[in-house]
Image (cartoon, rainbow, N blue to C red; front, side, top):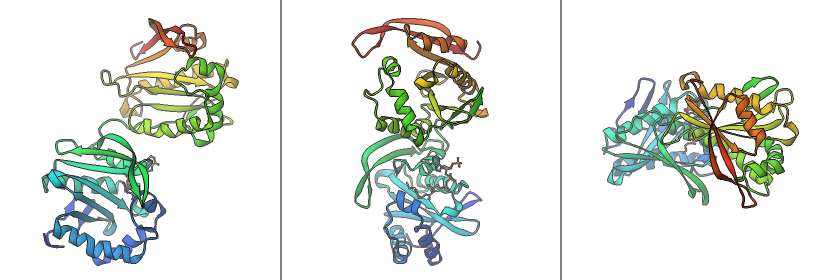
Length: 372
Ligand SMILES: CC(C)(COP(=O)(O)OP(=O)(O)OC[C@H]1O[C@@H](n2cnc3c(N)ncnc32)[C@H](O)[C@@H]1OP(=O)(O)O)[C@@H](O)C(=O)NCCC(=O)NCCS
């Protein structure tokens, strides 16, 4: 192909993909000074003007000429906003990479640009699959990929290479016959308040309280799956894992906090939201810090969670039809939370809930339907 003559111009009326020009060197150089860019991409650090010149005026043109990389300038409101590129493509499968400057982020520019590039990979270049890769934690990139239909996300430990340092990597892909629209839910964690109780996202600063709550003897007794002893690292790991659980659609977790002090009192989650057989069910799980027990805080928290879980997805809820709650038959405090919230006891599984000493309790299942 000839550069720039054969570079297709792609537009959706708001964002245009076109060939890079020498005028793009300056804004590309400035974009690459951004610490976010340096953190999440493989650009050289420090990033010099000659890096931008080399990439835009030599590597990108030769990519088009030699059929190894197809990079477009992203134009938004008449200006260079960033770059999106396709690479590889052997056998009809290749990768995409992208970035936009800090001043245009959060305006939906990148999803538009990515959709144009992916559509072109399928319809103009005959590809069957496009792969997206990002370092674990790059939620802005993950959200762009999710908006454009990338799915089947997996984490490859050490899969990424950041200037010689291996990092964990997310990989997802989209196929030619897929809709370029979100596949599955990315849940938000709304703030819910009632009766002096606030449900909010968990934060790093909650780690100490989480450790105290989960290391407590009664929590340890009833939640056999919890690490034992439960360390501050376990708490930090739990908190850090929540955004990914929401992003994958699997679970939503809240910190139950005192509305006045915002101190963490406990945790409540709705999980199993991507159940393969029944996509309309959800399971409620919880634990409480020992100093907040016995005040009906959990019953109030679960009441708010039920309302949110039954609200339709279009109205910001979880769109559930059926909620379940499970606990050991001897865990009367937990059974009480279910009963107070109108759940019905529907089954008792015999010797189904393992204790750490090797014994088993009967496991109760309660459920609640939208029609109740
Ligand atoms: C990734 C990038 C291209 C996104 O571009 P953009 O035009 O801002 O994309 P969007 O307008 O869709 O906004 C990003 C979305 O991510 C969300 N987001 C940002 N940071 C987030 C975080 N830490 N957690 C969750 N969501 C986050 C934003 O709220 C926004 O969502 P919304 O539109 O639903 O509100 C841009 O941030 C960038 O250039 N980053 C540096 C380069 C890079 O990381 N490239 C990808 C390498 S794999």
